[in-house]
Structures are given as C-alpha cells and as structure tokens.
Length: 346
Ligand code: UDP
Ligand code: MG
Image 1 (cartoon, rainbow, N blue to C red):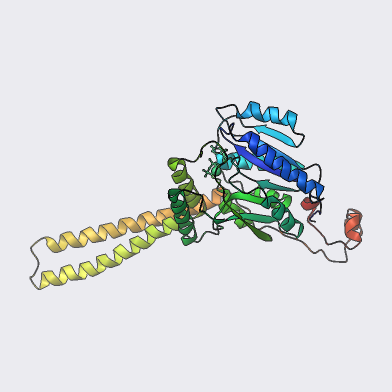
Image 2: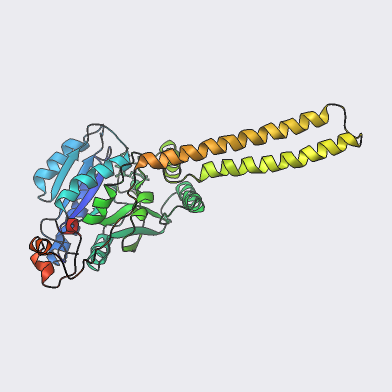
C-alpha cells in the first residue's frame, strides 16, 4: 500500500511572494533531487506553486520557473481566498498526480530538510506526518506568546490539535481522499487533519526566520484565523453560555429566598425584594434560553458540515468469496499481499 518510491508532490501556497520564490524553488528542487538520487521518491515527484491571487509578480514568476525547472508546476487561483483555502485547492489538485503530498509555506521558515524524514515515516506506513517546531526562539516575543496562548485555548476546548504544528505536514493520497469528504466550507486544516485518524508520525525541526519578504499574517488576520479555528471545530463556547445560564438561574433561586426572607423579617426597603428577585430570575431565564437555542444552532452547524461519520483504514475480506467477486480481484492481492482499499491503489 505504501510505495517505497512514491511520487511526492510539494504544495506551496503563495501570496505576494515574489521576493522569496527564487530561493524557495532552489531549496525544494534540491531536496527532491536528493531524494530521487537516494531512491526514496519517484523521479515523477513535483512541486506545485499555488498563486493565491497575488498582487505582485508572483504568477508570472511561477510561469517562468516552470520553464526553467522540470519539477515545477503552477496553479493560479482566480482571486485571493486565503492561506487555508489556497492550500486545500493545491492539495486537491496535486493529489491526482501524487502518492503523497507535503504542504509547506513559501517563505522557507519550515526546515525543508525534514521532508526526507517525512518521506521515511511515510514509507514506514504513516498516512500523516506532522512537522512540529521544537522551539520558537526565532519568532518574535509577540508571535510566540500569541501562538502558545492559541494552542492552549484550543486544547482547553478539547480539540485534537497538534501543539506547535502549523501547516507543514505530509499526507498520503488516501488521507487526502478522506479529507476531500469533509465538505465544510470553514476550513481549518490543522484541526481537521487530526480528525481523520490513521497512523500518524511526527518530525521535529527548528523554525527559521522568513527567508525574504514579510509575514502575510498581520494581527488582524491572526485573530480571525484563531476565531475561525475555534468556531469551526468546537461548540464548547455555546455550552459555556448554557452553563452560565444554569449558574445564574441557581443564584436567582438563592436570591429569591433571601429576598423573601428579608422582606418577611422586615429588613428590606420596600420594593427591593421584588426588584432583585425579578432581576436575577429574568437574567437566568434569558441566558438559559440563549444557551438552549445555541445548542440547536450548534447541532445545525455540525449537520450542515456533512462530515463523514467514519473513515475506513482497512478491510479484511473473508477468504471465501463468490466467484464473481474473485474475478474482479486484483491479482497482486490474490498472491497474499495485504488487502488495501481500492482508492489507495488507484
Ligand atoms: N498565504 C496565502 N494566502 C494569504 C496569506 C498567506 O497563500 O492570503 C501564504 C503565504 O504566501 C505563505 C503562507 O501562506 O506561503 C504563510 O504565510 P506567512 O508566512 O506570511 O505567515 P506566518 O509564517 O507569518 O504566520
Ligand atoms: Mg511564514
């Protein structure tokens, strides 16, 4: 199932990256060349640059690189759709021609040398290999703190997200095929990929500085990215509203008793008891109702995403099969090779 010489595709989303592309292509081409020489990947391996509606000369540059490097290919999106969507577009396009894909940013911040380790893990049978930063020394204090806070919050919300892993990862063709079945449109890949299951591996690397150009993720984009991640993967914030509703409601009962008792004992200013009791009571009822409506909205949200309910890793069919089924069988399988799902072979 896992080819020993897979066709490896490297998918690189690019937004206004004219300054860095020349450097990037040299590095990635060298990596592929090296892997090819070692016999670790097929000579048909390639690099796909996805132009995410850049406003600079990124696309003409990609077209030019394609002429100069035999491994380079390009995909031009009609407009800027953002990193995650551009990356998904690239992955879905490239998976048609590859056995496994590595996604990496254009800026060479992720150490390209660990692509080799990713391929080795793939050959050992990993469908997904995460590139994880072993330290963030090179990041600015601000980026480091916000990013660490973000991962903490995500994990606190019970999301299966890999710490310090950005979108630098290898995925096998069948993992990508399963990812394609997630038909949601709010895409947060690093939260979705762990939902696939499958055998996964991790490789570590030092995060470097951007080779050229500047970050395409200013604070505003970072905040919306974080919010997107949380709201597209978790309904926990809704639960918190419901919980707050219950808490306020409980307090309203206590306050109600207190108000009535104070009144009976003649300790309350006239009008205070009725005011305080209704204040808490209405507050509690309102929060509870909002939470309840939220629960339904959460359900609708999960419903419209139409995510696959299960993903098959492998099927072991019975030895005795009908003659008809045997006729359609793959000859390799009949010789005792492990059965693989049809899509992993095609
Ligand atoms: N990118 C993209 N579309 C966008 C913004 C960014 O395709 O709208 C790409 C960008 O070219 C780069 C990657 O996403 O390859 C990550 O961006 P960047 O390195 O600027 O983010 P940072 O590393 O600062 O978080
Ligand atoms: Mg970067």
